[in-house]
Image (cartoon, rainbow, N blue to C red; front, side, top):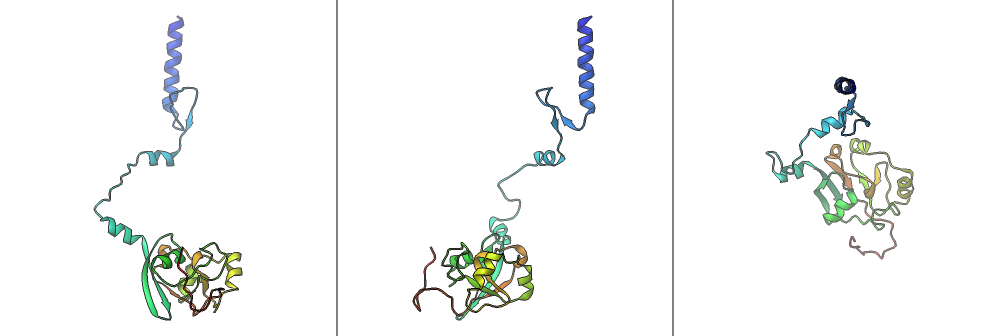
Length: 180
């Protein structure tokens, strides 16, 4: 008699668990895990480190934007990876954009001028700290920004930047610092 009541209780518990869509059965029957549709969808996806049909070079190219720098020597177009600052990209491509503070927002030597107002409007608004540093920049314009604060993103593809004729740094005239 005791065994039959116990087995009916167990059968009823299994029946109730199968009806409850809001919980996931766990190894410990006393611990119910709430169901999360987002996590369940992720758990069903498979991940691979190989590309599907596209070459690695094509996928890397699609993650870069085109940026053109204009200075006293002419223009130079470079490809900038998404997420990289304009200052870092300039240093990697031997463009004479100083960046004396190495991008720590403590100087104005990476001052650039965005040549297209439409592109300037796509940038995030400058912070108060950036505006304070821009006040010290040589040749400040309405579309001036610090290169260390402009981060490449897909909507900035085709960005055109002018480099000012000079910067306010304490280095001797003619000195060209090497990026660190």
